[in-house]
Image 1 (cartoon, rainbow, N blue to C red):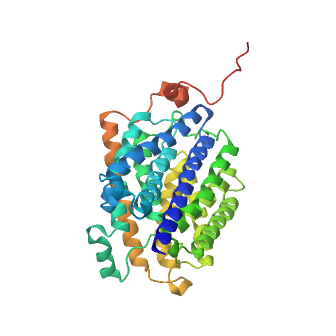
Image 2 (cartoon, helix red, strand yellow):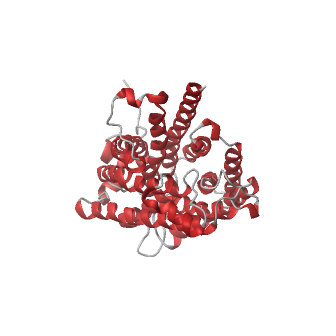
Image 3 (cartoon, helix red, strand yellow):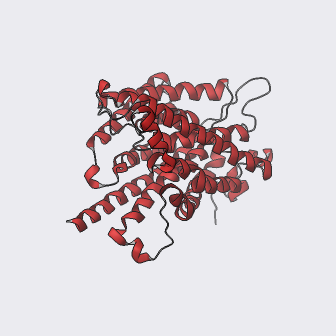
Length: 400
């Protein structure tokens, strides 16, 4: 029976890893559909190469930083218990690799290719796993201190804060330090629109992310005996809440409609195992409204050129999700309890602060040492031609 359980757990978390791996195709197509046509190839290449760099860094350094597990041992030891520790690494790697995928959307269309890969290596190797270990592996006694101070530990079941808020808040200083795209904000005060190149690809990316998210959330149980249908239904309710609210507040705009469900899913991750489905619906509705409102403010009023709106979507909705777990996870509002608002605010604030400092350090150092922004000429030509020497579609068909 024990061997059967080990095999079932390994298969369970492996399937979760595969589903979250598929989400990276969603990141790629969401960015591809949002950027202009001359940057579509770059969007696809960045996500795949970022994932590859993330894999190496997390395998060699990051996983050890977070969980103290080293893979510099024999294959016989690694294969113990059906290789569960290896597939657990695979599953958690897909979370870690989401950080550069999130950042990629914010800095799209004008960031240099190689400096971003260096940033990916540092973030996934050190910055992200440092906080991951605090939140999910009891590092430095932080969780014990929060529990002693508030009565409960900081709770983040599937990464509203650990993954999404951290990724979004790292992206904010990256976007600000990088500066806006050429001619995005003109000297006369006008905002130049850069419309999405492909709504169908944008929608495809959103749908891939939505489907994969049920692996992201449900499989965060990590063993088969801890699986919860409550997580699945709460994820569903938050997703549709975000969609409907974004539709109404975004005045039928397809970009808002397809980012609304993602906002809801980001926010519900932390408390998806605790909330009542009605609570999850409210959390998703608030997240959808938050995204539409803050995306509009950052782009048009504050003139922060966050191309895919990753700070509102992941940074702010992730922050809301961490706090919301302490509200709607309480028994008073129909939740399972075991969580409180003070603990959630403390843990969320720690994640946000660490991400901001990490983003400033990494991207500030890169800007000072080697530069992070393409030249106006390179940006005008587009990253597809200047970096990859090929466009997404040929200007003409070759005839013989």
